[in-house]
Image (cartoon, rainbow, N blue to C red; front, side, top):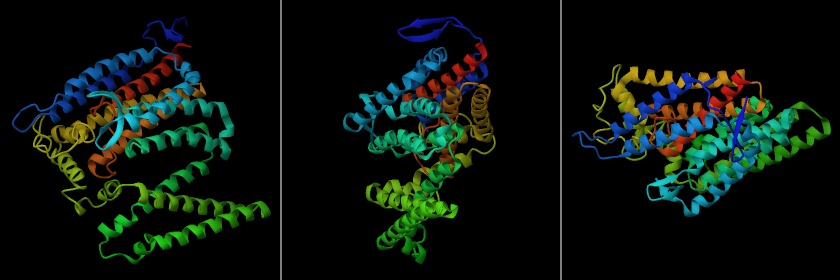
Length: 446
C-alpha cells in the first residue's frame, strides 16, 4: 500500500477499500437522533425554543465527522509510538485544568474561553487506551506478573486522581473499566483483575454505609451502626493489617496456597476500609447520596432523588409507541434536569417509546458488534488491545447512562455517546470509532 507522508504522519491515499459503511451509518444515525432530541430538549410546552444547543451540536457533529474521516485514514500504527507523548500531554492538561479550568456543574473540568472549550478528561479516555495498548504490547506475557500489572494500573490511576481533583467522579470512573477490559484481553492474571473488581465493589458499599443507615434504615440497624462506627473501623483496619502480615509471613515460610488467599482477602478488605474512610473525609454529601438514591429515590424526592424520579417517569410514560416527537411532557415542562446531556435517553424514551429505544439499541449493537468483529479479525496485538479498549469504553458509557436513566444505576454524569449534548464527548467517540475503522481498513488492505 502506498502512503503519503504529511508532517510526519502517514496518510493512506483515499480509498473505500475496507471502509466500514455499516459502522459509519450506525454512528451517523445516532448523531442525527441526538440532534433531534437535543432540539426537543430546548423546546418548552408552549413551543418556544429556549436553547440553541442543537445548533452547536450540529457544528460539533459536522466537524466531528470530518475528524472521523481524517482519523480513519491515519494508520493506527502511528499511535503505538506517539502514545507516550499523547499521554504526557494529557497529564499536563489535566494538571492545569483544576486551576485555570472553567467551572461547569460544580467541576473545573473545562479549558477554554466563554462558551468555547474542551474537556480534557474526555479526550484522556482515548489517550489512556492508546498508551495502555502500547504498554501491554511491550510487556507481553509478563503482564501476568503482579509488578507489571501494577505499573499498568498506575498509568490509569494518575489521570483518574487528577480528574477526581476537578472534581469529576463520573468521568474518572470510566477509566477503571477501560483498564479492566484491556488488562483482561492482554492476558493479565484473573486473580489480579478480580481483586480490583471486588475491592472497588466493597469500597462502594462501605462508602455508602453511613448514608444507608441514616436514610434507608432510619431505625438504625445494629449491624450498620457497628460497621459505620469510626472506632469499629479502626479495629477492623488493625485486624486486617495483622492478618495480612501473618499471611505474608506464613506464605514465605511454608509456601502454602491458603496463606496466599488469606493475604489476598485481608488486603482487599484493608484497601476497601481505607478507601471508605478516605471517601467520607473528602467526598461531599451530594456525591455520597448518588450512591443511595438509586436504591431508594423517595428518600429525597425534591432534592437528590428528583432527577432519577423524573427520568423514570419520562421513560415509563412513553409506552410502546411514545407520545410523539416534541410532545413529551417531562422535558417540555422542564421537569427533567440536564435533559440534553445526562438524560437525553429519557426524552427519547418518552417521545419515541419502546420502539425508539429498540432502534437506538440496535444502532449501538451494530457499533459494538462491528468493533468486536474488527478486534477478532485483527492479527496485530496492538490493534486488538486498543480496539478492545474502545469497545469497552463505548459499552460502559451505554450501560451506565441508560441504566442511570431507568433507575438501575447511580447518577454519575456520564454522557451517552453520539446522542448527548457536548462537543468533547462527541469528538472523542467519533475519533475512537475512526480508529476502529482504520484497524478494519488496515486488516483488509494488507
